[in-house]
Length: 157
Image 1 (cartoon, one colour):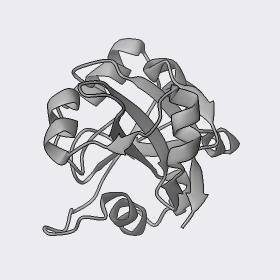
Image 2: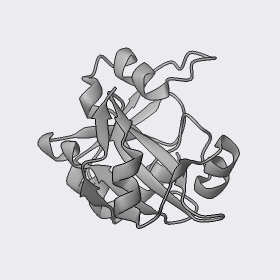
Image 3: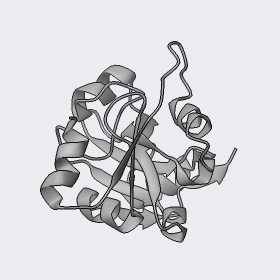
């Protein structure tokens, strides 16, 4: 049981869990999940933690098949230059290890955006709170649980 699973259970949200064997040394966690579970990478979303000020952080949830448009996110967040949080800071503010950072059940509620492409799918996949565990739920449920806004955040690599 992870904090992410506890969060969806408490909310009474319907979801499915998918486990796969995480390959030690792999750093492309989302792509690994898509391959291992034979999923369209456009349906598998990665949770990115960004620093916007000295001690302020935000979250962007984008498909693993895309790269984050930092300029678009900066405009949405009302900041000049968001930067990826260090792995240590991302782990500290979320309570999860890198590669298993879920947008759900984080230690602190961070302002969150989800790429609007999620809305084209009945369900999407996000980290279940540890490497090798994906949580499948509706994008609307994810948006509600994260109190997230939707926007165009990803661009094709």
